[in-house]
Length: 339
Image (cartoon, one colour):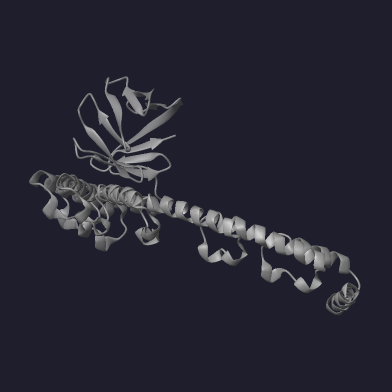
């Protein structure tokens, strides 16, 4: 009988593969089969009876390994498990489910029927805690389940939502996302100033003319806009030279972060941590984070407007980054060249 099977196997092999490379193909197939995975790729008809037993044991072992993760229940073939193994797998699935439930997330993936009464209480507390965490971001109001909050937590969440809304409003962008009814009178003034500053920035780029609201610009800002447009037009002209409507200053990099204004003779020393000091005037410029600076001598606050631009909120001067390290004061028309 075993002899007849061997003859049939040999005939099958010859029909499918021909004589050359048979041993190599058989070895490759056996190797694939013995992983216990990829059953559809295992050509059982090329295996001997002994190899089939080995492959079956490998598949049973691989299935047990998959089942004991407690995940992928649909991939676990219970009919290949012994009674003892079924108990082990069930315990693993229960533990894995509890782990998922205790994150407080993915409620639809939590199988409550697998939980004990004590575990249900723990899971409920986890869901309440995770919901509070979501709510306290102040974002995703639609994901915040208010019915799970205590009265104290509702107050905290409301304050978080108001704070997040203020943060959005103070960017000066996304006016449609800014909920003005949540702002105080003082905050409305701050937000209005932020929107005006953002509008000025948009106008000064010279792009998106339709987004530039000229009716929001002051006389000073209209002057700044005129100078900026004039300078941009000059720089785009092949025959243009440097310098705007005012004087041109030259700033030299002295190394180590220090700079010297060759026009005025002022030496600006790098004090570390983003701070600097004008040794000629004694003014100390402190880095206050986010690209913003503060002149501790004059009290002027210099705001980073993005793209390398700065605005002195004390004087109203807008310092535009002209590229290549050059800057231009759009209020005075001074052009500051760096090299």
